[in-house]
Length: 253
Image 1 (tube, rainbow, N blue to C red):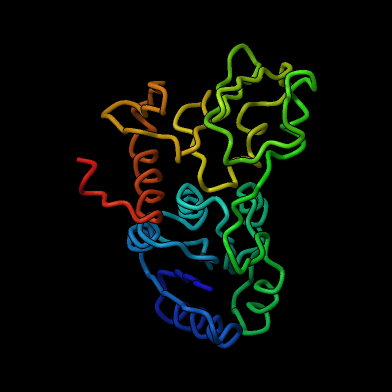
Image 2: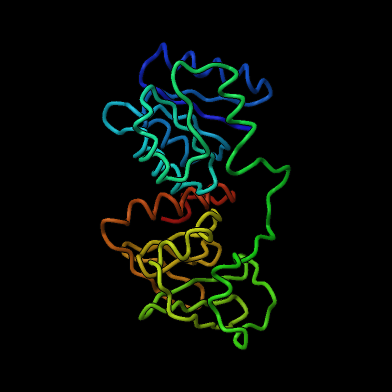
């Protein structure tokens, strides 16, 4: 298990880090005092839990957590704060939990024992399209009883209907969605292999052939344009994914 801690106050960071080590002696713990340093680490490393102080100068803990989830949607975010009024804002990011200061071994252990995304001994490669999303496609259009996430190439929203492109060439068309596209695909986006570079697309990064200066090229020659304001975030997440899979990023340029 890998755990990161961050607080811009050195005494608070030391107490937090030591409490984590006492609560989980077998874990690898990495401590940071600056959000930028943790983001650099996250771009190259996978970790299971992040204990994040909410009130920091520059980038606060809520903003940092949102950035970290771009790298790994399944990271367990646990906010650390002296102010309970931050709880409502924190819950919008679907954290694993939060701890009030001053932290203790007991409060840390309680959160580790009740993680939103429990630790697994091996990577789960058999995740299935969640039932809510799967049920939106008419039964007559589905040749499979269940669709593994790995069989999804990309999804596209057109006129409030989702077009699901599978790796076997099948194309399924959903019923009209009532909620936003972002909310509809939220569970799918918890699978770290997926990225949403555009408000109307979700792509399985295993099927991206190329990143250009303005778009992703999906296998089959499909080009998905990336809005300028999303480009850096999309590039960072894609490169982090490639790095975790052992790709040589220098070969991409």
